[in-house]
Amino acid sequence: MVSHDYLIVGGGVIGLSLAYELKSRQSSLKVAVVDQKKAGREATWASVGTLEPQLVFESRQFTDDPGLQKSFFNLCRASQLIFEEYLRPLEYHSHIDCEYRKEGVLRLLPDGASGTHLVNFFAGLGLRADYWTAEEAGDREPALEEGYAAIHLPDNHQVENRRLAGALIEACVRVGVELMENIPVIDFEVRSDHVAAALTRHSELRAGHYVICAGSWSSQFASLHTIVPTVKPMRGQIVALRMPRSGFVRFSAYLEDFYYVPRNDGRLLVGSTVEDAGFDASVRKEINQLFLSRLQQIIPSSDTFEIVEEWVGFRPMAQDGYPLLGGTELKNLFVATGHFRNGILLMPITARLMADYLLNHETHILMKPFGVARCFRSGAA
Image 1 (cartoon, one colour):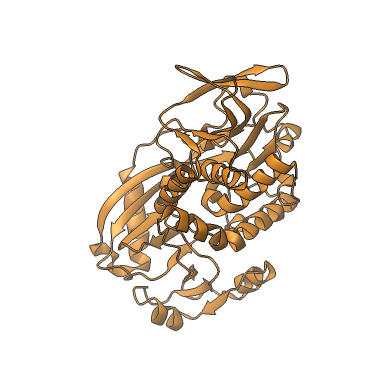
Image 2 (cartoon, rainbow, N blue to C red):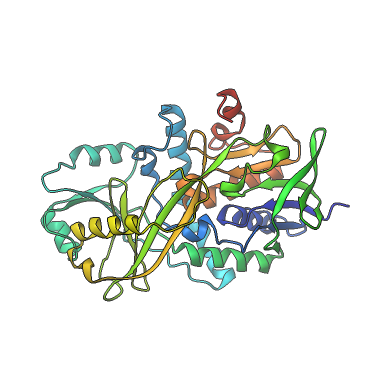
């Protein structure tokens, strides 16, 4: 017996937002989210919540296919532009403030480095970018070490990812999504051209449609090894420090692969690594010491900040670094996974485009490049 119209496997921001979108569009749908742990406690919980589409061109983790890279930037940019519009009703219905901050992000420049080419590059992408001299940067960010100029990206906002997870969970419950937590799906029963059931240790979950949104665990199902391309965990470590007061550091900022992100509650999140280390969740003290050393070069007074939390998260990365969105060779199995470092940013556009695809059979031009077939064509599955 089919008990749900849609069973979404994975309760991070991608799975939760898709469930919320489906149920909000058609209240009569029976939608369930099943997660192996508590919803929102994996990559979603470990994130820092900055919304930065330009990083696709600055990260070394993506393939250098220029067409796919530009398509991915367009997807990220489209999601950035609708993020606040998507967030406000979610906050209203959940009664949770997700601490959406709009002061922008700084791309730091070491003493003597020119920012002209970067400003022009960002402008060419359609991103507002303002060059701040070292003096201007020091005036606007007094905690900054002298000598650092900056490029201010005013449209790169941030959200408190853990509050966002809470808002999504509450909103899903309010609209009638069934949330099944601490129930690992261990495999699927596949019959010919469709999925007949999702299998847990103690039961079978049957639905009309199945959507895998399981992040780094999306390709762990034996029956789907030739159907869902490989998604592997990329380990990231972050440390949270306590600033002397909220607002002591005003702007999120990054320099190469290093970044820090201030929170409204007075924490400063600092990170991060990108390691191909499997599901090793141990915190490495030497990494945190490296973070603290780099931070002190940029924010000298940070040597007085207290460590209040340390954690590791697993970013889901497909072989080429880009997400997997759409259908599979099984007629009722779909995927929305592999968002790597951009799950929070891509939450609203993924929810909307996947809902269009599932409910209306529409494949938006933004989504077309990210189907699973590309991985099997390239032999990267």
